[in-house]
Length: 331
Ligand SMILES: NC(=O)c1ccc[n+]([C@@H]2O[C@H](COP(=O)([O-])OP(=O)(O)OC[C@H]3O[C@@H](n4cnc5c(N)ncnc54)[C@H](OP(=O)(O)O)[C@@H]3O)[C@@H](O)[C@H]2O)c1
Image (cartoon, rainbow, N blue to C red; front, side):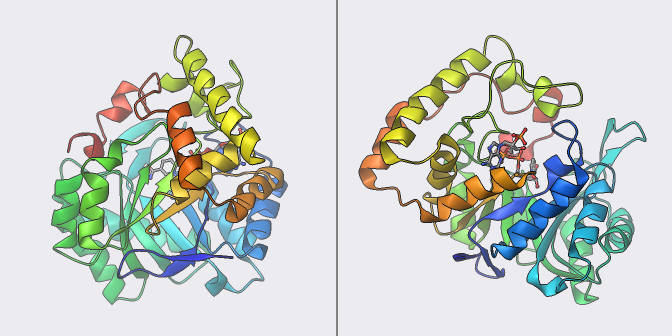
């Protein structure tokens, strides 16, 4: 396994991380035994970074990871946890809470569900508009001092918030969507992270499967985030799948799969970027791991750029109500 340093203050992690969200309902039903087998296969392949959120399946994802880690060396895994998204028993989204007291309470429950005594990277899933980021980071810093958290990360915040957060405590990484068709971070967010020595854990590197080469129109079933995501909607999806077709031409010439070329492109954007792959099955994980053997040349990168030029995708990366919660889209 290759490794990358997560920011100037963070841990060294595997060059690919495993995002476990899809194992808890976000993309429709997932098979529990297969999910656990996928986590085990990732650990056995040398993946150390496991990403979750306390709201993925309202605790389901953390309990799944906790179960998968039983009987294993807990320190083999670096567990990254997002908190703050509020959901009701039916799974509806209620907003965000990043108040200091709430954070400490969320963390207490997370440690129980994961069956661990510390979290490696703890981060607010979104900026809580009612709480200054300094207060949120200070509360996590208290938990670092108390030994319950090792490192502090951020998620989907913009340049100003990153600066303010980093003035309180070292930030190891920003988790944010970054892919061939979501390049918004390149203008100001990525430069600020580089200036401050903050790494990037990139999610949605396959744009939720849209640019994986395995997606076809009308595939999303009920309960699947993609059924409501603008890029998957009639009128947009056709154009976006056209980009995938162009990318397939480049992948075929290189002798790799579309998913591999899309993930390799993200990894090639800098040693400070760690792609999170959202595999929930072992076959998808194996495909993603193949990226570790893919080296993109300048000509490959130019061909990819011609196939999928910046800004070519149709539709926003989230529906309007979720877009409005993204601090990262404001600065
Ligand atoms: N910070 C944030 O706001 C935020 C937001 C979203 C996600 N995340 C984190 O980032 C992780 C990754 O995000 P994501 O799952 O949306 O992104 P993704 O990797 O772009 O999409 C994953 C989906 O792509 C499909 N896929 C097809 N081929 C694949 C392959 N070879 N390897 C992996 N997936 C393949 C799978 O769908 P099928 O299984 O249906 O084929 C899979 O569920 C999440 O698990 C979560 O931990 C963070």
